[in-house]
Length: 448
Ligand code: AMP
Image (tube, rainbow, N blue to C red):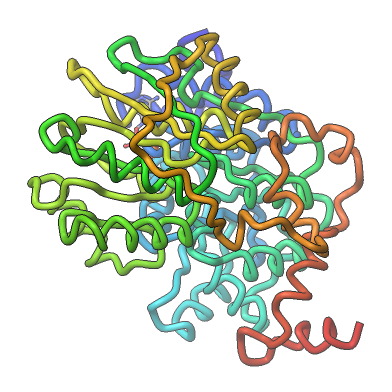
């Protein structure tokens, strides 16, 4: 199938598509359409630029009937104000020939004005999680009619620390609803959220296939632990002409800061770091300096790397082995762009061996291993995360150490009904004080 005709779009949508000048659906639009139309929960792995916004808007609006009720029926949650504005614009474009009221609400602007707009009524509400939660708490907004929920760029949302607002929003939504989620990268946090709030979601992925790009030379080293990996990286970086523009991936912010500090001690200001706790200005400066060559080594997390359009990276270093094989494909795709030759090096510890095998299985390619250099010191020092745990209290910690948390393997768990679960309990334990004025729920939780 590769025409819009074959999607059997309503006349109103078809006319709007024609006005936009789109000739055929993008792969994610093609794949998501029938799944969303069928009413099933869906998880889409797709990046910005793939046409994902229309991928959910088309099926959601296909059968959408006019109504003049006040409360919204479709809720779209996105991480940033910019995305709210963009999605609102897209809804307007695609509903040009329909009677649909769309409204965007986001933080950083007057909440009273937004509450007044909400009171006017809308069919489709596009919102950032914080503002949405506040409007709902203030009773300015009723979510009881929401039948369709879309969470876009959920990985970014979680990375920005919106988990509290998200889980609380889930709890005030009607239980009978369709959940649709898009994420560019799979993380354990995303996986956990799906597991707790989605029912047997269909996975639609147009993420990079398992075919490694031919122009990327891949190698790997087995290294015992974090500090040994650091020693190895410092050893490799000594060859300045070979390692002249190096993007180093780590899986989380804490490790990114720890590694950056250690590298900077030895190498000074030629090392930079970006992750979501750094300010926007700082991140922009780091990327500019890396692009211009002022910084030779940039440490980054998976999520932060998504928007980077970097030229001529000499090496991608996978300082840790991604639990999600697809993330590895995303990472190494940062090198060897266009016609350039790229090089990717993977460090894996004995604990990460299983994840490495999963990556190799996905690619159907065994990554050539380089013998660990004798000159490099093997450290016996362990990070707090690497130290054996005496007692594991929370499932989240257990999950962090689990070798494989691929959500496609959780079908058994997903058979349960949508009641909120371990996630909610974990969150309740974690957050004892209300984050927002008037959060009566926080007090209720404490009493439990
Ligand atoms: P998104 O991934 O939703 O941010 O969309 C990226 C861009 O692709 C937007 O500017 C859309 O207008 C455009 N787009 C979406 N669907 C199509 C299509 N089927 N054909 C051509 N362009 C499209």
